[in-house]
Image (cartoon, rainbow, N blue to C red; front, side, top):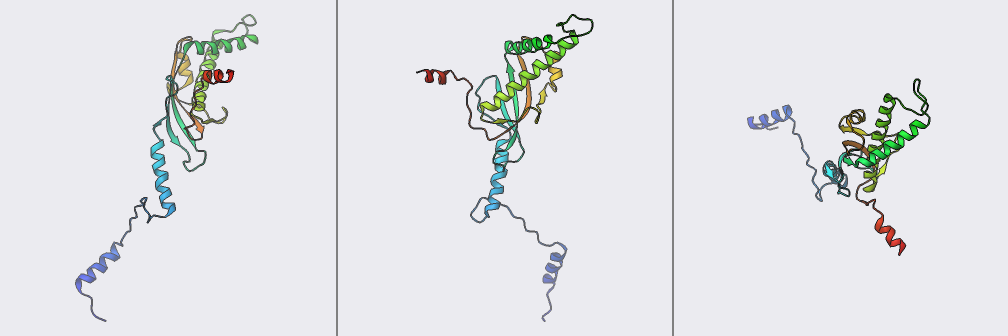
Amino acid sequence: MPACSFPVLLVIFFNLLFPPVTVAFVLSSPLATPNQRSVVCLRSTIQNVIGEILPTLDPTLKVTRVSVEDPSAEHPVCGYLVEAEIYGPDVKKTYNQALKAGTLNANFPGFRKGVMPPHALVGVKLSAVTASIMDACRTAMEMHGLENFPANERKLRMKVPQSTEELAKQYEIGTDLTFACEIDAIGVPGKATSLDTTAEGQETDT
């Protein structure tokens, strides 16, 4: 067996110390396997949808997709940031409905039956604000063809301000209600529909 030259021994020595590492770059090319190409497409899809601002169907509602739980699912669950401004009289209407329902059975010590003390009115206000936010967010999801979770399964995550209690405390009934929060919904945006059915109703009448 011929003796190895010093350069060859040196190469063998370095190969033993530092084994070659093969780095594979998965590209969308005919040489990549279908699984590798799907991984690339999946990662690309994740990057594209996070931060996507959905089409504006209502100037008072801005919806941005901020998270995806499982992009490979047929009906993925995504998180959406809803920035909204609710018309003041609409919030006041909700407040009056909550107040009416509360006074029907109100029976507090020291107050006449049907009269609510100040601390109870704080709860009525919080209830009206929370209901208004929930309604606006769920309406925004429906406008984009998304399916809402039952209210008891997924909770809203307030962003600005950081809680509904804080918002209700600073909110004045009758003024516009501005907020930002996150909500989870099921499906893929794209089947966007306006909730204005005036044109549809006119068409039906004719």
